Every structure is written in C-alpha cells, then in structure tokens.
Image (cartoon, rainbow, N blue to C red; front, side, top):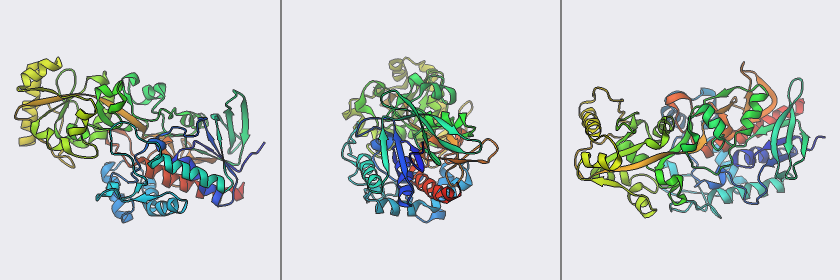
Length: 469
C-alpha cells in the first residue's frame, strides 16, 4: 500500500529539511522516526546550533567558502559535493528562516555568525532543552505538519523495498513489534551516522569502540547505511569521524562532555601514548588528533603534555576552553615541577618522556628532529614545552558523528559502486560520505550545514524525479 509519495527515514535536521521541501512542492511525505518520545534524541537536538562550513561563515562568498572547505579537507572533498554545499549555503539559510527557524549572530567570528536562536547555553555538560537544536526540530516538525506531512514515531526502518529498477519503499518494525511494508515512490535515508553502533565502528574506525567516548545522542546506529549497502549502494570515507578530545573522566562523568574539549591544548602541546612517545602531527587539528587516538591499540592511553605557558595560551582558546572550564567541571591536571616527576605520576618511562619533549622542542626550533612525527604549524602554532610547572591531562577520543557513509551525487541521489544512481533512493546528512574527505586528510565540513543543504537538495531532486515515475 502506498502511504505517501515520499518516505524519509529519520527525524533530524536532514530528514526534516528533505520532508519540508517535498511537502512545500505539493507531494505527500511521511517521516519515520524510531523514537517514541516527543523530544526524540538525535545529534540535531543536542547541537549548540552553529551553522558553519569548515569552522567559518557559510554565508560568505561561495568561492571563498569552497576554498576554505578544500583547505580544511586538504583537497580530499568530492568537487561536485563541495560545489553543491557552498553554492547553496546562503539559499539554505534563507529557506530555513522562511520555515520559522531563527538565527542570530552569536559572536564576531564566522563560526558563530549564523547561530540558532535561542543559542546553546555556555556551560559544560548537556544543556539542550528549549534551546538551539531542540527549538529548531520542533519548528521544522510543526511546519511539516502544517504543510500536510506526517511524522510517524516508534518506526524502525529495517530494509529497503527494491523493485526491478528502483527503490519502492521501506520495511519497518512498528512500536508494537509488527513488521509492515510501506510503499512509496521515493525514499530519503537521513538517519544519521553509525557512531553509536559498536560493530560498525569496529568494522570501519577503531578496534576498541568500547574505549571511545560516545559524544553524541546515541541514536546513530547506521541502519540506513546497512540498508543502502544491502541495496547495492557504494560507501565512501567510512574510516573517519568528527569528534573532539575529552578528559578521560568523561567516559563516566557526563559533566565533562560535550564541553569542555581539549583540542586547543593538544594542538599547542603534544600527545603521547603509553610509551611516552608522540604518534601524530598535532598541528593538523583536534579532529585529526581525535581520530589518531581512536586508532591506537588502546584509545585510552593518550596523554596531553604541556607547560604553564600553553595552559595560559592555547588552553584559554576556543569555546568553553579547558582553562578554566575543565577544572570547574570536575576534571583535573596532573602537574609536576619536572618532566621526570610528571612521567612518574603518569606511570610513563621518565627518560622516554624527557627525550620525546627534547626532540619535540628541537622540531619546534629547527623544523626537523629524528624519530619524530612531523609537526605542522598552520593553522595551529607549535608551542615549545620548556619551563615548569609541567602539566598532563589523561585524554580520550569523543566520537560525535561519522564523516563517511553512503555515496551520493550533488543532488543527494544514492550511487551504486559503478557510479550510477539508484532511482528513487536519496540520502542526506551524517549517513553520507564524500564531502568530508577520507583517510588521514579528512577534515570537518560542518554537520548542520551538510544536513540542511543536502536535505533541501534531496527534496528538490525528488520534485524533479516524481513526475517521471
């Protein structure tokens, strides 16, 4: 039975953007949301609400925005996806505003120029109710219903219904446990990444998913990715994720995540493993370091090493900086007057830590050092570690959303392994890959911008597709 022209899997930003665009063009649309709660959890509801591209103004000149994106992703982003994102960014913000989503300028920099209103609370821990993403999702849901669309909750998508040449609907498990087939003329997968699925995280990202901090809403199980893969879709960039470095106590203490993050300290100082040696280029940024930590044999072995100058320099940088918010939230520094004493407190080999810091300082001073990973200096300055007191923070990798997933074209159409589209099947948001690159060079483009722009584009592409079905 055909219940609607279009079925959208997932009620986050990407799904509601796609559904609203479909509805305003006159097509019937139903959103399937697995949670039964009114304020169903997803990363879009947790968000602090900063709409940006590559940590800067997404409403800037499109060519400049694209160049910034390519620099951040180090040339690995798919050119057509980068064009689609940057050429449609301004238009997407205007369209969301027309639906009732409110934006304010929350700060002087590009990162905060397009912020949801009311903004996220400037506090550590989770503070999402009645703010930012929570208000945005309620607004978009109300608008969808006003346009004739529906949101069916307690519906878990299990399998795509594939005809001879196109996608024809979804098999779902209802809140009562019944399995039903919902037929439609097009399907949009928008159920988020696979960060909360330990089997998929182990398959693609880390041998020890149990030792990563789930810095997310816990709703991203990757079911959409698995369904698309079973239907013949290509997967891209699945080995990287967006996340931040957190205090290790955040694994058990919710007051220490999602903020403060320790990225600026790690980028200013060094990160060592259980052997007291560096293992990555800290100058490539917090997202890069977080991925490098996750790939260690033991992701809970990483320690950030720095001195008082770094604590009072980079340590005070960015949103809710470690200095002073880490301490006020219940985290701690491990401090000592000498590196030898610091190593002893950490259970590390003192001579190795002293040698690591000595060689790192040589790298900072001279640009080269034997037996050391390289150290980029752009965009993050390398600070020497010279004068006590010396400090350490035991860290962990916080995974927010996976940056890779289902391959799509610039119209959000799902692609097969051979590059051909699967008619009637679309995907948007964190379940997709290709925009944020892959491999070690992967860089963060921005979760809200990615979801909103490609959700809107999916709806527009469906409007062009449906008359031909």
